[in-house]
Image 1: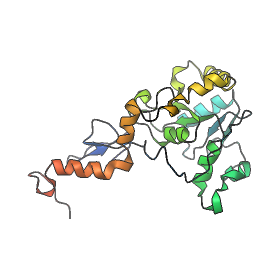
Image 2: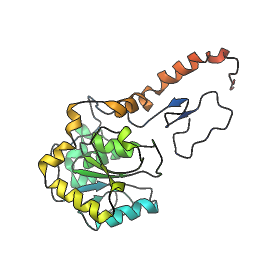
Image 3: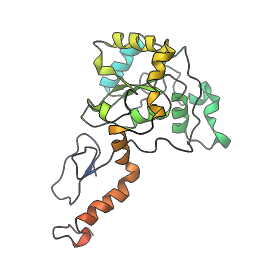
Image 4: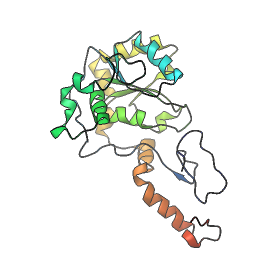
Amino acid sequence: MDIEPARKRTGHEDIFIGYHAGDDVQVTYAGKFFRIIHNYHVATKKRDDVLVYWSSSRCFEHRNKIARELFRHIPAHSFGRCENNVGGGDRALDFYPDCAGRANKTEWWDHLHCAMSHYKFVLAIENTIAESYATEKLYYALEAGSVPIYFGAPNARDLAPPGSFIDGSAFSSLEELAGYVKKLAADPVAYAEFHAWRRCGVLGGYGRNRLASLDTLPCRLCERASRMGGRHAPNATTVS
């Protein structure tokens, strides 16, 4: 299994598991979405003063450059190591005590996911831009009830709910993107349209992406192996 963009077969696999639909068994990051019980609190009200949330601790320059330029034009909070502007460290609970959870059973990453839910928009930039490669960066933002500002898979419309995110690459400049985001934040009706999909549930390409998530991998892998004849298949590789 290799679910990173640089994946490649070694030539010794019976079954290759990757993120692309063309792989033997596809696996996506789109699972565990409409949970009955969250591991963290989700805010019911969004901030109007600071519009964008970002958190990244792997400081790739192409991502930092986008964040730096965008944040010049729009109020934003960065909670990670990269371009941090909230005072460093795990400051989520300092900003949002409601993120402590019941009996403090949440972890630091739950605090960040909860903090994310207080913002109308979440900046989501993939490490690598590749077709069909959409990670938790996109899906965490959707789960938090926010609108992702997404820089990633060029076919993201096939992977996410319809009308649920802003395609950052569709704008001629980050200043233009910031202007659009600010205008959208000030228009409750236009902003609500980005959440209309939530009334419809899991549809289309997003539905297919969910069905191929890590959550369902064990069963789908067993089904594939069974169709191939399992360990008794003529060309099966035995690993000891």
